[in-house]
Amino acid sequence: MSAEQQYDDCSLQIRDEQYMRKALIEAEAALGEGEIPIGAVVVCREKVIARAHNLTETLCDVTAHAEMLAITAAANQLGGKYLNECTLYVTVEPCTMCAGAIGWAQMPRIVYGAPDEKRGYSKYAPHAFHPRAMVTGGVLKEECAQLMKEFFKGKREES
Amino acid sequence: MSAEQQYDDCSLQIRDEQYMRKALIEAEAALGEGEIPIGAVVVCREKVIARAHNLTETLCDVTAHAEMLAITAAANQLGGKYLNECTLYVTVEPCTMCAGAIGWAQMPRIVYGAPDEKRGYSKYAPHAFHPRAMVTGGVLKEECAQLMKEFFKGKREES
Image 1 (cartoon, chains in turn red, purple):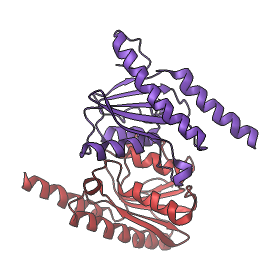
Image 2 (cartoon, one colour):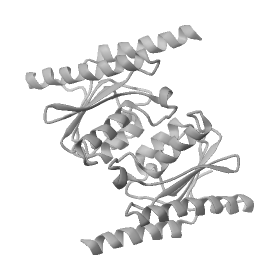
Image 3 (cartoon, helix red, strand yellow):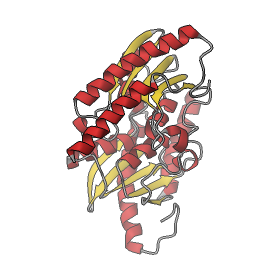
Image 4 (cartoon, one colour):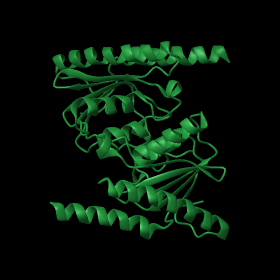
């Protein structure tokens, strides 16, 4: 499955949008905390087992991206470090660091919202995921991108 | 400065080897704990401000690589998330994930020991570091590689 594909399966599209809305709730929480608004959830067998949002400012830590925190939380929840039955939903295309972590966790499916042309893995680390991982991009991408625009517009007005 | 360069500056080589020995002590600690033996230290203005070793098994977390833990610890120590006056010493070439984190932290210099042909950033994410970052590879590479060989030999004998 390639990024930004058309769905053949309507029920899959509905489910992906439902889970992406949960990731968007996380992204909105990040925005409310003055963080770059990116949220993620990890789903295992139709259950959300972890949710997280970007906390790089709060934790003063460049590694505290939504995906990284969600992967750590999901592994804690499952009691195993490989998330090879899980899907990651994240509002913005993962960066190189997060794509590397997703690869180590052997995640078989990654669904993202808005593309990130500047920092996205597809430009800088296109082979970071597990070789059989399936990727779907562009799910609710307008909503996901809108939060990012709001954040950076606010930052420009501050300065 | 390119990877595996010859040193023009003898005092720099001596310092790099001294700090790499501290990273090796961390790697040995990892080996003693049944972890893949990789260690890292972060040096700022000639002082070690963070040291860490791989803890992926202990923490049940694929993100707990030596470099990631060292970056988080260094940022805590400095009270700022950008490590743009720091050098990272790590016993094995960083992977895609760690290279991404090193890039986010804007680290200006990275020194590693043994190359990692299978998972190293230079193959999978060669542009992950800050564009002006200087990289020196191959420092004490035999000692660094030897620990990895011991670990994997032990694993083969177990199975």
